[in-house]
Image 1 (cartoon, rainbow, N blue to C red):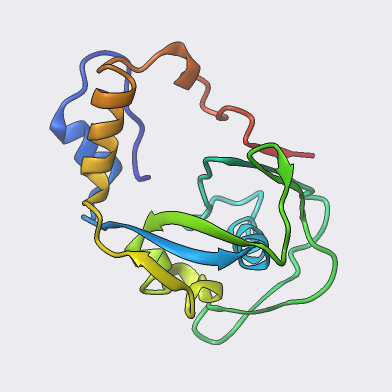
Image 2: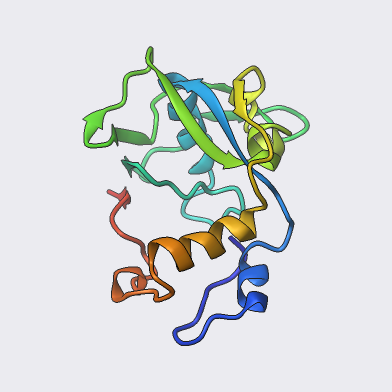
Length: 168
C-alpha cells in the first residue's frame, strides 16, 4: 500500500495511489513455518519504516521490538536464514495458534508470492492454487463496493490498524 485514502468520496485515482503497480492477486499453499518466517522477515527493520512490511488479514501476531532481528539477508537482500530469538510471537490464525507443520492457504500479490520480491524467499517452492485472479486495485474496489457497500466506516479510521499486529 503506497498511500492513504482520505475520508469522503473515493475516486479511481485514490485507489491507483494505494495500488499503483498493477500486481495481481494470487493464492498459494504454504506451511505455518513459511508464514512465521514471512512475518519475521516483514518486521526485520522495525522500528524503521519498511516497504515490505506485511499487512495481514485472518491472523494476529505480536512483535517484540526489543529483540534484535534474527533475519540474515544474502548479498541480494533476500532472506537467507533466521538465527536466534524471534521477534514475532503469539501468531493466531482465526483465533487459533498457528501450527508450523500445518498447510495454509495464503492470498497476496504475485510480486511478493510468485516473483519472490522484497526478499520473501520462503514462498519460492509454494504450490500455486490460483494465479492472476485479478489486479490488486480491482480487489480493493470490489471490497469497498461489495463488502463495505461503498462506505468506509470508522472501523478503518485508526492509522494503527485494527489490532492485528501488536507491538510489545
